[in-house]
Length: 324
Image (cartoon, rainbow, N blue to C red; front, side, top):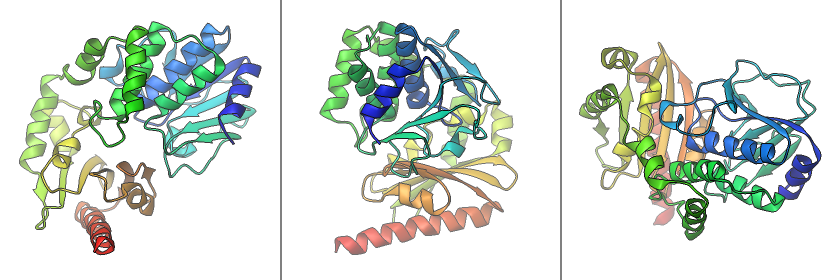
């Protein structure tokens, strides 16, 4: 299924609930809010929900009266639109059987097309790009708040326009959003320059224990619940920590282990481009993109760490052999 079917449904129906993955970041929140604002501007009913709250650094987005944290999907609505979620399970919600239609809009290559209507486009740099195209196809106005949301989605997903998914189109859309009212300085300041002291203290502790493999192609960091308590932080404060080991010269894959609870770890992978970490994450029950992916593992710390790192090493070895 494709974009025209999504356009047709959004134009035909009147009420929508929009959600994304748990622990939402700029692409999930920005995409969902941009779509909700556009639908409201068209005279329809739309709200954004998530099982988790909006992260602190995204509270500058126009969320008042638009977003709410909900532990269950409220009823009724004509359609539930799921954005930027590699699977329905990633939303954290049980299947909303009383909502007649689920629309799945996503750019994760591991997405199984779980919706009644699916628009999955792995070549898109961000779900925000897909929402931009969707609004253009619908003839929706790009207001200043919508532009702010889309720009936030793009700058988040491209790592401030530094990652390999940054294209000329990314910059073209970003420029158009600025012309429509997005303030790049305000957005960047909120996202990257409003750190609470505890976050920087935590980052310092994490980086002092960073490890690099003997061949210098894997780097990994970890954060424990004890460190969070010591610095007065939460797992939300660790957003983008994985970019630091990824930035080391010669490193092909960076891994970030986050202790959620005893014997439960959230694992993030970042690749410089040669290793497809979406396949790595899928092996462990997760998913994502070629360059950024994640999974959750249960077990003793040493066992989880060693198994994950062994699989990363194997993936690097496979790529190296294929390149010879």
